[in-house]
Image (tube, rainbow, N blue to C red; front, side):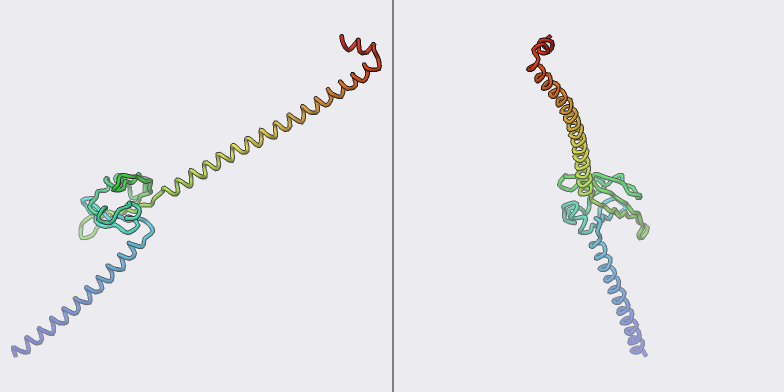
Length: 193
């Protein structure tokens, strides 16, 4: 009887251990699944704990901040230029561990796990967008200058054409006067006065 009881208890423990192993395997698969999503995201993500220390980052964050995960984990939002950002999104001048900065759009999501608050910060680098906007503005200014020069050229061409017409009339009259004075000495004396 006692052996049977031990045998039953042993079988119960085996089933419990197997059930626990299956649950742990599912948890591990879920963890890997979410890690892949986190790492393959297009935005840089930094996860902060309630004490506002970075506890996790994805690959994009490492690339954007030019640091490995150990160079970012443990840092505060202020050290990374992320302090003062809001959940609705805001612009920030982010700081890299090497001291360089870059313009970014920052959105913060707040959530609670096990009664502890966490902050997921999404960072989008705006450097390229700003460079493109500045290049587009320079091209717009160059186009304005080219249009002004074109208009000035047209004006100058019109003035030159009008002046040519006036000069042609003056030269024609001068030639007529020259011809008239060559044949009539009295007209030459009158034109000299």
